[in-house]
Amino acid sequence: MSSKLDDVQEDAGNRLFLVEQGRLLPDAVAEQDQPGAAWRRSVRAMLFLACGFASFAVLPMAWFRSQPALQALQLHQANTLTLAEVMGVTDDSAENANISTSKALSKSDVAHLFDSYAQVKGLAQNTSAPTSNASVQNASVPTSSTSSPGPSLDSDAQVEVTAITRTATTATTTTTTTIATTTATSTTSTAITLPQTPKLPSLFCFALVMPQGPELALIKSHFMRRAGIFGCNDQVVFSSGGHIALGVAGNTTFHTLPVPKVVMTKGNVAIPGQTTNSWLNTKLFMKVFEAILHDGRLWMHDWVVKVDADAVFFPDRLRKHVAPLTGHNGTDAMYVRNCGKNPYIHLMGAIEVFSKQALQTYFDNKWKCESQLLWQGWGEDYYMEHCLDHLGVRYVDDYKLLGQSGCEFAPCSNGWFAAFHPFKDVNSWWQCWSLSTGQNQPQLV
Image (cartoon, rainbow, N blue to C red):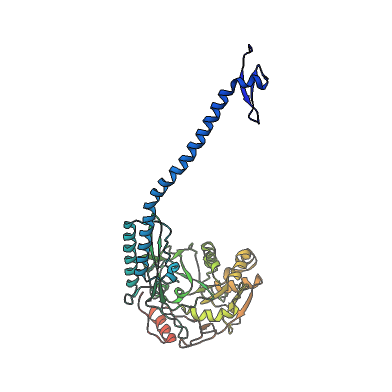
């Protein structure tokens, strides 16, 4: 046949066709290329047989390669069993021991695991050490890191803590094993016997002291023995003398916070508009309350308490007085009147007790008091009483709160009054404190 054959094609029925210039030729013409088709089929058969023999050859190789892994697994299981025996772990408690047997473990890893367990066991035994003493941080002094707490301020609620008693309990050891890393941890439960000071309702207390005079010596003695306002949940001492060091708490020195200096004069009730013969200090305490607002810690507590340095003050007793007034969902805006025998003033400045909601009302509306009341001839306590009344803040009468001549006198031996006033020197202040608590003057902290 003279025509040129371009290609050979095969249909679905394995019939061969010759292609000449894009046209399929008849079977008779296609049969001329039968030897080429037979050669291709032979190649396919040989490839199929080669693949089959190759798969059978892989199986023995895989078996030989698996032997080291099986031996390692057996070694790991044996080591795990030995470790479980050392740790006292039975088959029923293997899960509690957290020992994994699904991964291979080398001999060096097993040795390291035994060493870790020995260390953990030794640590657990060390928890049975003798009772040790440690100083306790006084929560009432925010800057204290290692100081001891203050003395008990109420014979009915003993709060003195001098040491932490550590009682070691059974140590719980958890050991975890992985394929490449061995981790051993020890968790030791230690019971600590620590009397808890009643802290609710929470009190934020503050005082103002002059940079010279007996007040500074008084407040320093309170700080050094953690008495007075230093038994509150938190406290701050202000002074127009700037940052005055009151003492050291741990590694930190406790300082006063500064307030601007204000020129003050003494009042004279014979002068119209003046209500006191004492200092006309309203302007100064306006600055103090602004500093309290700027400080911001008052919002974390239930009550804000202003205490004079010469008032013998017992915070735990005050908590008992205000506890019935403290709501679980927040205390209403109120203040406590503490003087019932003076017809002109019912809030004596030796101790002033405000709910934080009452001060919120004051801060929001104090401009009304400053602009609408004739406060220039008033003392600070007279001003706060009339300002809160002017703003619609309700009051609660508690005339057993303050023991003071001219209001409700009470001797220092009374165990219910929260404050006694005035005791203007350090010795008389602590004598009243000892008489009221039945305890000797506490040691310096």
